[in-house]
Length: 328
Ligand SMILES: Nc1ncnc2c1ncn2[C@@H]1O[C@H](COP(=O)(O)OP(=O)(O)O)[C@@H](O)[C@H]1O
Ligand SMILES: [Mg+2]
Image (cartoon, rainbow, N blue to C red):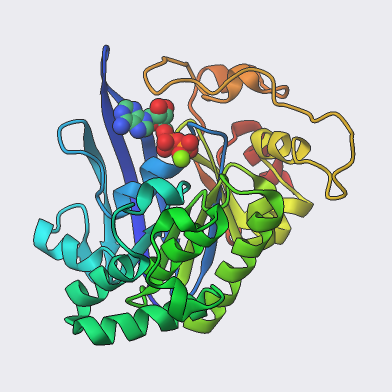
């Protein structure tokens, strides 16, 4: 098999708390293949963004530390790379789109200026060439009347259009990996669907890999081939999307699934997993999901579960369920 585009191996990221350094993300390992579409899902606070930001080493120095792990890309470890190498990789090889397009855009620069910035930086384009390319990119992200829109300021655009601009900026240098962190969370449902469709089309047209992060399993189901489920900073399940939906193994995945709104938008009351996600500095013996788990057994309270491959491409972090899978 071809070697992966990005390989995260045993990543642990810690933040400083009143009680010392706490693991926001612990022992996270997964690969992203060239052109692959990976979804990462989990409730707010499960470590999705911390993992994503680590790939480009975007955490503030001093506040966060990478206590274990390696993130390999193109034969080097990004956690050890020089700032200079990282600057070259950010935006050119690996680009990111965030939840809130307004706060990521600069209000005093035109759309043209903002798209041109990375083209001029990474590709040394002239002002005129960058402008031409910016118009092409706005076309590519399906902003109507691109030649006129390119000279506007962000506040003139709707939320959905701003997110399209963010995506145009992100793909300007044809990255090999696009990380989209809750890219549709701030948008109306219809706009959400359009942005997801755009991302899907762009992925196919440009052949880039996409890591799509969402707290909403519905969004992930629409988009990803493979789904990584995170809980309290750990991967708890990782499976191809159809396997995950047909036979979820982790009780947390089952809970997320039960709390998905019906596709017809029916008025049925939404299920919510009881309890709340623990903070990184909370001590919990055994499984961190245990206190919320309806299937918890005595073993779950004593030994932390390990992430184990239970089938080809299917990993699970749940002691009783892993044992049950072994029996079949
Ligand atoms: N800059 C930070 N300083 C301290 N703790 C943080 C920081 N960023 C994230 N965390 C903590 O790390 C955990 C994971 O956060 P995050 O990755 O943002 O979750 P999400 O899955 O919602 O993206 C949370 O408990 C969060 O409070
Ligand atoms: Mg987040």
